Image (cartoon, rainbow, N blue to C red; front, side):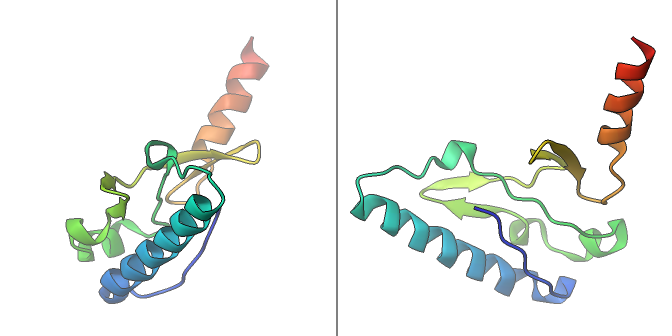
Length: 102
C-alpha cells in the first residue's frame, strides 16, 4: 500500500493519526481474510525539506503499527526506483554511475 498526504509541518500529528487509523483498518481487513499485515516490513517516509523536518517533533515522525513503532526511513526502493526523502534521486544516480563504471 502506498499513501500520500499533503500537510504543513504543524499538522504532522494529525497526519500521523490518519495514517495510523488507515494502517489499523488495513490490519482489520487482513485479519478478516486470514492474512497478515507484516509490521516489520512496513516503511514510512516523510518527504520534507530539512527545515520542515526540524519543525516536526520526533514522536510525530514515527508510525505505530500493531505494537511496533516504525521509524521513518530516508531511502526506499519502489517500483524499480530508489526514492529519497528529499526527492533528489541521488541513490538512483549513484546506482547508474556504478553500473556505467563497471
